[in-house]
Image (tube, rainbow, N blue to C red; front, side):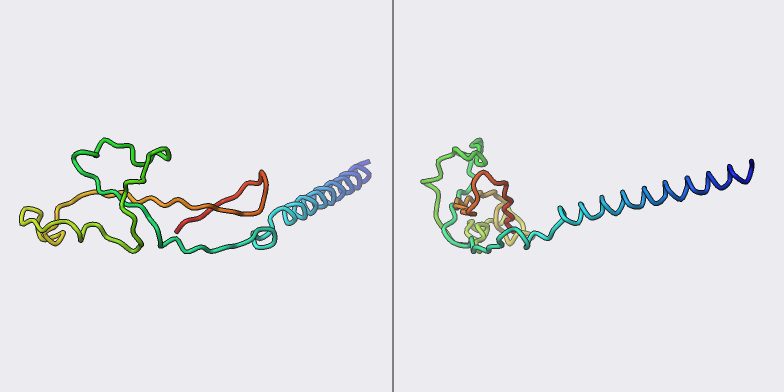
Length: 130
């Protein structure tokens, strides 16, 4: 009886092990189908965005403006190309200190509007700007 029980348990354990292994292989194969490299199904495009930026220096008069709002009218902003460093355009000031080249500390906002045609309709897309 003991021998029959041992044989039965051994067979049961081998069967469940093989079933679990088959299920694992099936899941692994499905994951391999869904986890494809982006290059297999998506188009990779690069666009130079250095030109036609809008710039606004933050001043005492406009410091409470919501510059991040997409609805903000930036038509009066200065148009420029990158690279650009507005800090260099600031006046010299001995009170500003030498750490910043005797230029006062200030803030500025840059904006760029562009169209991203990707050819899909109602498809999810991701745009990386670096």
